[in-house]
Image 1 (cartoon, rainbow, N blue to C red):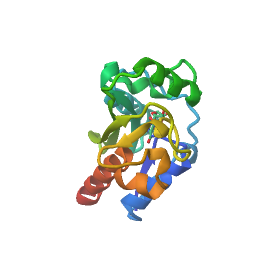
Image 2 (image 1 turned 45 degrees about the horizontal axis):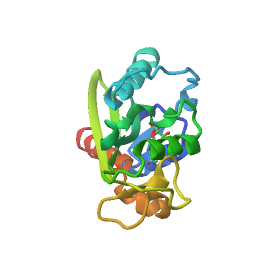
Image 3 (image 1 turned 90 degrees about the horizontal axis):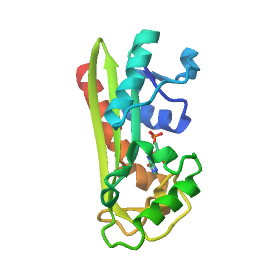
Image 4 (image 1 turned 180 degrees about the horizontal axis):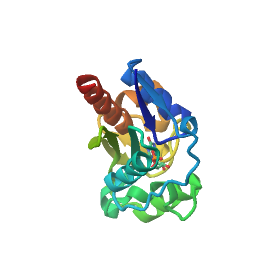
Length: 192
Ligand code: IMP
């Protein structure tokens, strides 16, 4: 069995990845390896942040590992909030982050956006990146109560519901994270 550390303590993310990569891979969390470090994440791109986290783990803990970084890019706002998605308003309060996004967009009609996830895999002294994106539009207000983060604002292209109005199975079938994770799983299965 091949062991890989996922730079997360989010049980939901772990479950999603473990289900897709299958039981040939044993995915461990930061808690499993006793890492309680505040891993630096100071880049200004998703790639830089994912790489910074996986490189930190690989260097300090000597383990094959991967790390992800995600966020929402709104075209009319110069791709903000991007890497600042979790703290757009200067706090982690998502109600405030959503309010600020709606305020900055105002009632302009151009509401194109996309969610992106980048995964950096550090394995056997190599680094590989996997990306997932999903395009859609930002609404004029919140719709739905499921999901997390900016889900109530985002309607993926070709759908009538926001991510927050979808079941988690519906969202996971098309989400940026699921696409990136599927690419990671395909790579691992083909090469290890
Ligand atoms: P993370 O890198 O996966 O922790 O995501 C960073 C931030 O991007 C989150 O705190 C959310 O604000 C936002 N985000 C990432 N993925 C999603 C999603 O699937 N739905 C809504 N917001 C998301």
